[in-house]
Image (cartoon, rainbow, N blue to C red; front, side, top):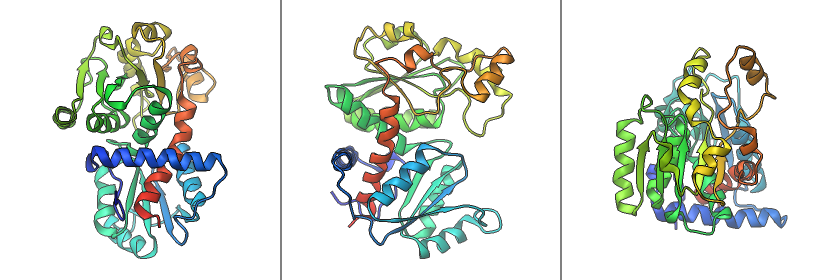
Length: 327
C-alpha cells in the first residue's frame, strides 16, 4: 500500500483498502508506543499546524505524533495567513518551507486549496463539514472493543445529524460496509448531496445509511455516538432552540437500554457537556437551559470508551503521517 505524498482531506478520497491499511498501521504504531519503542519515520520532516478553531485533542495529537516519529513541528500563530496574504500565496510559501501542512478551521474549500497550491501533503484537522482524523480514531476504538468486523457494526449517531463529525463518520462508515443510522429530529435535514453520496457508496460496500427520527430504530445498535448540540462558531443564541429540538435525543440510560445490547458502546468526540462542571454548562443551567447532550451516568459508565477514543486520535494521526510522509 503506497500512500506517499497523499493529502488527508476527507475519507471520500480513500478506498476501503486504504482505510483498512491506516487502521492496521495505527494498531502497530500504538503497540510500539506502549512498548516504549521510538520511531524515526518523520526524521528530517517539518510540519506546520494552522488552527483557526480552538483545539485540545487535535493539536496535542499532531504534536506528539510528529515528535514521536522524529519530526519537527511549528504551531503557526499570529501570521498573515488568509488575512493580508491569500490562501494560495500562503500555501505556496508554506509548501516551499514545510513537508506537510495541517489545517483546522471552518472552510473545507480552504483546506482543499492548501492542498491544491502547496505541493505538499495537507491534513484536515476539522472543517465545518468533515472530521476525517476523528473518524479513524473512532473506528480503531470500535475494533478494540467489539468482537466483530466493521462491516457487521450497527452505528447510531444521535442528535445534530447535520454536523461535521456525523458527516465524517458517514463517509467512513459507507466505505467500510457499516449500517449507519442518523437519529435526529425531522427538522434537521442531512445535506442531500452528502446523503446521496454515502448511500451510493454503501451499496458498493454492502452497508447502509439511514436517516430516522424514531428511537425504535436503535434496537441492536453496537454504538451510540453523540456530539455537543451547538458547534464551534455557531451563535450562542442557538442554545435554547437547539436544546428544545434535540432534548428527545439526549443519550440517557433509557436510550442505551433501548438497544437491547448489553455490550453497546457509548462514544463521543469530546469535549462533552455531561455534567455542570464547566463554565458554560453552569451558566446555561442558571438560565434554565440544560445543554447536556449525554447524561453523566452514561458518560461515566462501563459502556463509555470516550477517553480511549481521545487517545486513539494520536495513534491514528501518527499512522496517517507515517503513511503519507514517513520513510
